[in-house]
Amino acid sequence: MKFGKKTAFAALVAASALVFAGCAGGGDVIEEGSGGDAGGGDGEMYIALVSKGFQHQFWQAVKKGAEQKAEELGVRITFEGPAAETEIAQQLEMLTAAIDKNPNAIAYAALDPEACVAPLEQAKSKDIPVVYFDAPCNGDVGLSLSATDSKVAGALAAEHMADLIGGEGQVAIVGHSQINSTGVERRDGFVEKMEADYPDIEIVDIQYGDGDHLKSADIAKTLIAAHPDLKGIYGTNEGSAIGVVNAVNELGLEKGKITIVGFDSGAAQINAIKDGTMAGAITQDPIGIGEQVVQAAYDAANGDSVEEFYDTGSYWYDKSNLEDPKIAAVLYE
Image 1: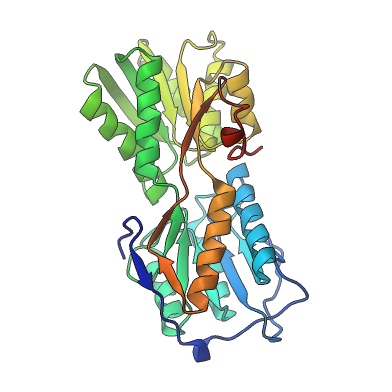
Image 2 (image 1 turned 135 degrees about the vertical axis):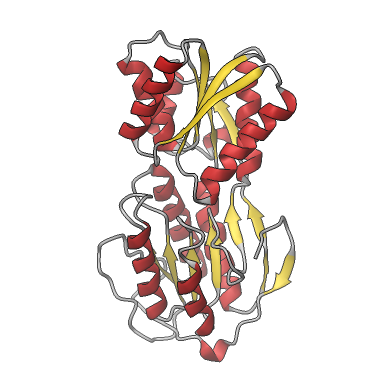
C-alpha cells in the first residue's frame, strides 16, 4: 500500500481468527533481549510492536507514548528493537517471533522496506492486522502508518538552513540511511526544496553514516576538509547530527562557523543548540507516534476504521523557542 494523507478506510478483521494473549496488567513492555513470552490466553488484547532500534532517545520516547496509550486502553504490548538501526536481520527475527505469538495486531517500523514483505505476508495469512509506525514496509499488508511526513520535515530543515546561511553558499548532508523511508524522504525533502527555491545554494555532497556518531563524525570531517567554503551541514537524524557536532568540536572550529541543522531531539542536540554549536533542528512527536500507532493497532484489531496515514507533525526548534510550551511538549532528552 502506498500511504497517502488522511484516506480513511475500514480495516475489516476476522475476529475469530485472532488469538488473544494475556498477562498480569495493561501496558507491560518487553524490551529488546529480555526474552519475554506473550503466552497466557486470558482474553486480554495483546499488541506486538517491533521498532527500528533502542539506541536513540527517539525510540525511548516512542516506547513511552506506546506504554501510555496501552495503559489507557487496557491492552498489553511488547516493544522490541535491535541494538542498532543497521541490524536488519535481527529486526526480522524479532518480527517473525512476534508473528509466531499470534498477537491481536502487530505494529512495525521497517528498517528495510523490501526485506519485511515476506514475513508480513505470513501475518496476513494468519489474519493478524498490521499497522506501521515511523516507516512502512512495501507491499499491501499494512493498514495504517503513524509517522512524521518526512519530506515536509526535510523541506522545513532546508528553509531554515537557507535562511541561516543567507540564501547562498555550499551545504552538505550527512544522512542516516539511503534504504529506509525516513532517511530517503528527509534527504529528498531537503534537496528538492533547495533546488526549487534556493538556486544560489549548492549541495556539494551527500554521505551516509548509518546514524552512528563515530561514522557521521568521520564523514563530517572529510566533508569539511574537502570543501573549505562549506557553510552548512544537515544531519538527518539524532546520530547523524551529533556526529557533525562532535566533528566540529574535535576540529576546534569556532561555534557557528559551520551552520549545523539537525533532526530529532535528545539532550545532546538540545545542549549543542544552547551552547551555539548547532543552529537548530527539526523535532518530531515521538510520544505522539507511539500513542497513535497503539491506537491504530487497537482499532484495527477491533475491526474499526483506521486512517491510512496519521501525520504526527514536525517542528523547528532553536535557542529562541526551546521554552515555548508547544515546542517543549515535543522535545525529549
